[in-house]
Length: 323
Image (cartoon, rainbow, N blue to C red):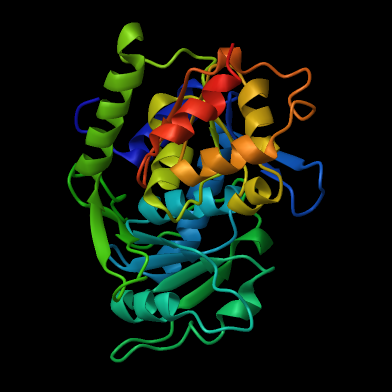
């Protein structure tokens, strides 16, 4: 792909595949059977540009944009808009209401963000975290779901911001460690890092097809966007490969693990990944009745990683269902 970037590739998708489905998110919080919302590449790009205009009013190139939002399409757009505006994205999980989240406090102090992107449903949980840091003013707080991002809007002018990654090696986002054993540490992820990761994936799993995913390939994932595996699988891979993604939340999976299995079976050439524990849960909690009428034979690949892989899990899990 040469010296490209996420914003450049997204623009190309919107130009060349405007009406193709980009992302579908299935929300099981609204309805036990799931409520689907879908965006085409053109819609993703328009929302990204419109939100980027908002971000340019809140920060300058190189400032941090912390994403503290529920899993969903707005989370994806928040990340892409941060890059489009030249900001450094910091994907995080939403802190639980009623209890203090040391990880969020630590990351906010470490990044001193210019803006926090969130949703109206969780904004009340963020009050104690969105505070001025020493030497910095309080970050702007943007409730993305309350904005009209689908209308055609003109640029508000002002100095042009270079989209993050345009130089090929700039910092795109900070991936923070869990903080379970020590203070969370931010790992710098560059444009070069992401494209190298993408090249590895395409070589390993699509080498048979000239390192190009067939057009009917579907990324299927419930992994959290604030985790590196879920982030690359659910957001980065679909954009760079130009394939659609069908996504849900970790809670949606944990409530009913069979949902993951059914999503894999219902979507063509499914490509997915999860840690070892997820395969254990899915094996125990998915019944034959759950899979009645579903066939996993069309699944292209399912990765097991991000924690120790147990051979016994591989022997008794999904492979037993693929005929």
